Length: 222
Image 1 (cartoon, rainbow, N blue to C red):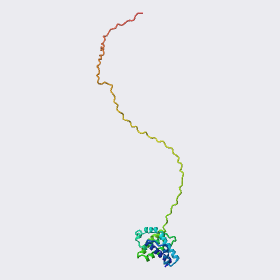
Image 2 (cartoon, rainbow, N blue to C red; image 1 turned 45 degrees about the vertical axis):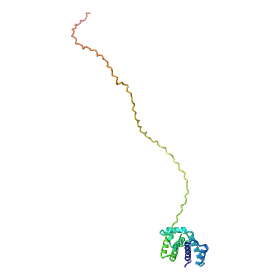
Image 3 (cartoon, rainbow, N blue to C red; image 1 turned 120 degrees about the vertical axis):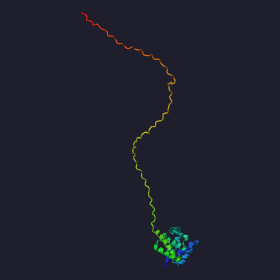
Image 4 (cartoon, rainbow, N blue to C red; image 1 turned 135 degrees about the vertical axis):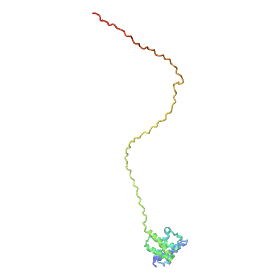
């Protein structure tokens, strides 16, 4: 077995113990466990230590990623071995500074699932880690650059003259005329006195005159 493969296996054993035991292991106990299992190989011990410490440091974020990815599975329902294999591989995929090839990380996790899990563990682990590995290469949101506010002086607006608008006067509604009672000056009830009128004088009609005979007058002698 390769050094790193063996170091991952020992780191998984430490994670399993930390998951099942409420009391955390002391640093001295962790150091002794690594030294005994890795036969004092310093590079392997350093790699296993970084994996174990890194998972504990980022455990809250790792578990949040697992819950969001394994939509039909809650962490307590997973097998302890599967749960910690997923934690170990998720740390390497998303949080470890030293980037390793994704296929290597996935293959190592699948091999651990085959060794420490059930018949279905390998496919279960592979399906979840395949989705998580895509997040590694997803573009990170870029924070927008703050734009400085530019004060722009308002352009003076020339006031246009207001055109006079002829407004028709409202129609005058005549007020109703109140009826005024007028007292009559005529005394209707007083009778009119009769006035005696003298008849006009009778002019007699002219009679026809009898013809009068005239005597011719002779001229006087000179």
